Image (tube, rainbow, N blue to C red; front, top):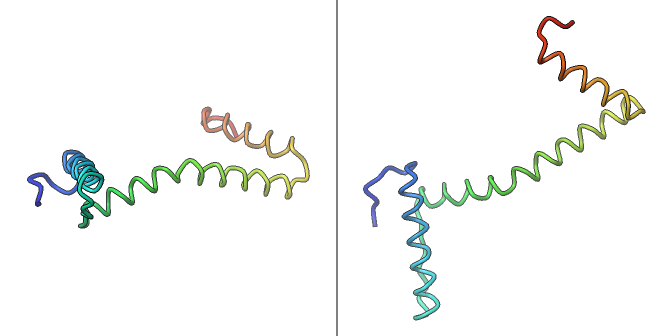
Length: 96
């Protein structure tokens, strides 16, 4: 099956989802093994995996940065004070 829409079109992603639902029903009812392949299906799968892993990845990066700052400054107040100063400086460009 070749979609009429482009590979990055949301309708194509929706079509892939619908085809996978139908193939899952065919497997349950008749024992058919059907696979959805192609670059668009791979892109949809990779995008879903990356989207699900992104919050965990960001949390790990934030925790590692805090740990490194704690190890370097040997204090909790210095990294937190510095980060608050930097965030206020980004909102007030005239601040040194």
